[in-house]
Amino acid sequence: MKRVTVLSSAAFAFALAVSGAVQAQDALTEAQVRATLTDQGYTHINDIKFRDGVWKADARSAEGNRVDVRLDPKTGRVFPDEQVANLSEADVRARLAVAGYTNVHDVDYEDGIWNAEADDPAGRDVELKIDPKTGRVIGADKD
Image (cartoon, rainbow, N blue to C red; front, side, top):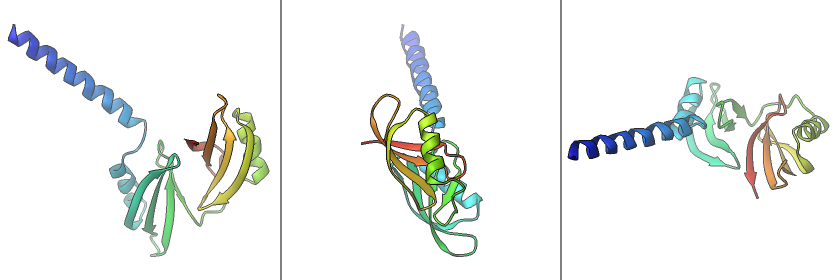
């Protein structure tokens, strides 16, 4: 009887571990953020924090310049603060409207990404972080 209990407990523990691994794959960990930045030539990586729906960090670029970076929590794409936006504010507003966001306001470009506040398709007030090249929402933080 004990063996069945041990096996059941082991199976349960395995199921929990697997479900945790699946959830962990949905977003980068702090260690993965550091590795991504290092792989892209950044050094002196500090103050890694998950805020406003994106990862943020201070670092030095390959040229030795101090930069603030944002990372897409799912893809790991890095957005350095000095990056130039390919989209205008009107483009960002249009893409958000197509994605179902309403009452879009406070749209601004700062630290390498577009920021906006809006109501999501479910009607919740959210702060958005938007890819400056594609207009895709990379992070959302509910107010």
